[in-house]
Amino acid sequence: MSETEIVLRGEAGAFRLDVHAVWRDRVAVLFGPSGAGKTTLLEAIVGLRPAMRGRIRIAGHWLEDAERGLFVPVEARGLGWVPQDPTLLPHLSVRGNVRFGQRRAGARGAALLERAIEVLELGPLLDRRVEELSGGERRRVALARALASGPRAVLLDEPLSGLDRSLRARVLPFLLRVRDELGLPMFYITHDPNEAMLIGEVAVVLAGGLVIAQGSPREVLWSEAVLPFAQALGIENVLDARGLGGAAVETAGGLRLVIPADVPAGSRLRLGLRAEEILIAADPLGRISARNVLAVTVASCEVGGGQALLHLDTGAEPLVARVTASAADTLGLERGAKVYAVVKAQSLKPL
Amino acid sequence: MSWDEAIAMGTLTLRVGGVAIALALGPALALGLWLARHEFRGKALVEAVIALPMLLPPVAVGLGLLLLFGRRSPLFPLLHALGIELPFTWWAAALAAALVGFPFLVRACEQAFAEVDPRFEHMARSLGYTRGSTFIRVTLPLARRGVLYGAVLAFTRGLGEFGATAVVAGIQPGRTETLALGIWSRIEQGDDSGALVLCAASFLLALAATTLAEGWLRRAPGTEGNART
Image 1: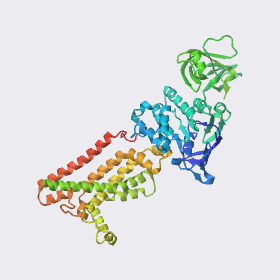
Image 2: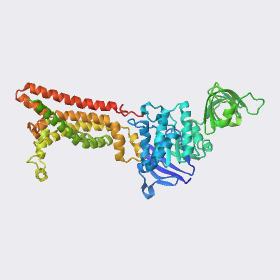
Image 3: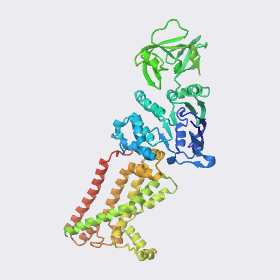
Image 4: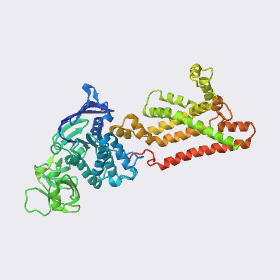
């Protein structure tokens, strides 16, 4: 894929954005805590923030270059933008809303419309009124509308935010299909590290209007630059703990753990634990080097992209673990399953 | 007074009211959109000027029109050369009705447009719609309840217009005598029952206009305001 380049600088009210990022991957996740400037950046890419000046090139296609005086107007950018608020037109049916996007595509429109309806499984909803749709259905319709316009890139602003866990699990597979089947460059905003890792080929991490890190989602989310924001970003397991003497600590929620080094009794520390560092065992284990073996119950299991995200009820602090979908299947990791979470002391990293 | 006379008068009134709305709607939409989307110094003054036809005595508005389009107007040679003679025609009555209803219409349009969430327009622009087509396809449909309400208000206000019309169009039976003027001349002539018949006709016209508008709004989906989806 040709290069994508986003260099933008400018002010929006009291907020200052100063972004410089270049990548060759197709699927980019714009990741960061709320207030980091993600939505402002996406709107600038869409062309709605002319006060932000710089260079924008998506997969080799120029949209903006302040030096050359190039600023492609919003309506000529050919992007498929899905804002956080689906903004479905209330005076049109679902079909009318999807067709609203089709107009730009011209002769290709009919085929694109059909494809969008098929990929997002909107057939049964087409004659409904917009008010009758659920939150997840609205997102799908807004996404179909953008796809029907034949965009050169898809821009999604927190497509799963505001949906409850079961609805997210229903919408996520559609997002993965759009990502995998249409082959379009994609910008995906999220503040959820799990989504970032699941969706993105490259993560651009924003904080306070600046790019603080960029790279493969799995690595970048645990990089030095991002750790100070771990709490705000909700990086899977962040545990506040108190030393009990020796290497034993107790978390705020009452979970007793062993960490790699001794800490003074009563001292306070914060520990980070990546979701994939937690091993899941279906049966009790014999003698094992791992210092922490917790009997837990699976509170939920979200499967997508070959991965399964587990929310574990430990009786104290909840934990999030990630295993492959096949492991989840073999071990029968469904809601209510009683299993063991195995955590090496070395995996508990002081933040 | 004959039925034919009353029906002719009602038809003339409808024609005057319809043409008045047709004249006022375009400028009112443009002005309403502009006022809804821009904040500037002196906006209150602009709004006060627009409200003048509503605030002044209608007779004064009529006099203003007469001075502007009459024989003593500096515009007269130009208008005469173009063959336009406005005063004392039904066009003058329509213009008077348009002017008197204009402030209502502008205000209604401004409020209706102010309530349209600009995010809908941003979405449309990003999908390739120009400013103009975004207005037609998104802004206007979302604002249509308020605009229609204003149009009905201005229309019914125009149907009942008396003072300005009497000055600039005169009370000429069969030519410029609308229902409101007709009621006045019946009272003058002591024909109370004739006046009452014309009152009933005015009432029916206004009722029909509002009922049609209500019915149309009720039938169309998505009219529960411009609530965010």
